[in-house]
Length: 111
Length: 113
Image 1 (cartoon, rainbow over the protein chains, first blue to last red):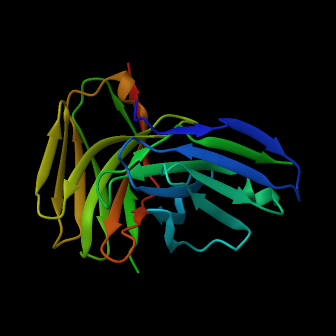
Image 2: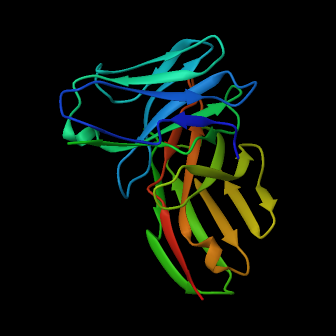
Image 3: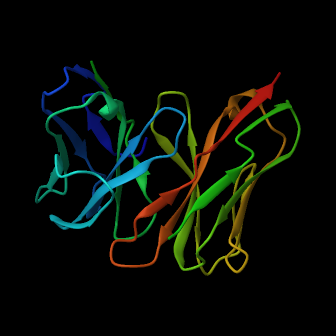
């Protein structure tokens, strides 16, 4: 049990729709990062938030956006969903650049 | 650009064997390296964290080593059990403004009873 919780665990969306994924970070952690993991591949870095500011972004288009709240929980928003967005979305929390702890992930299927 | 490679991609061994999983990275400027376990369709469980100044870390039957100069880490699993079957991923946290994790593709391990 890492203390990092993600919701929902599964969801199905239609191409073109918008989705919001949520992450509650471990108590005391000030950094949240989001990853996309396609089947059979390693996670790909989407972006990271440190104390409510985005401080790093991977090679993802602007329709992937996020927020970190004062309690350090976070949201990942994806607009104009495409079929290729189907993946496991992982949230990790850490205290600065130390050990990362992951939630159980959200499985997104776009049809 | 940091790249992380894990070899082999898959491994199947009988129960009880000791085994080694390999992780290599191209840029030695790392902050730390972390080994994770992932069960099918699930999230990631942190197994071991090695800081850049450390050479190895141990937890139970697991031992991870780090050789920054050669860009290599190994995860040693002693006396393997069927419950160890999972995908094992390594990730390096790069030095820099955001210390993001760079991942290997993982080694899928099957332990046969």
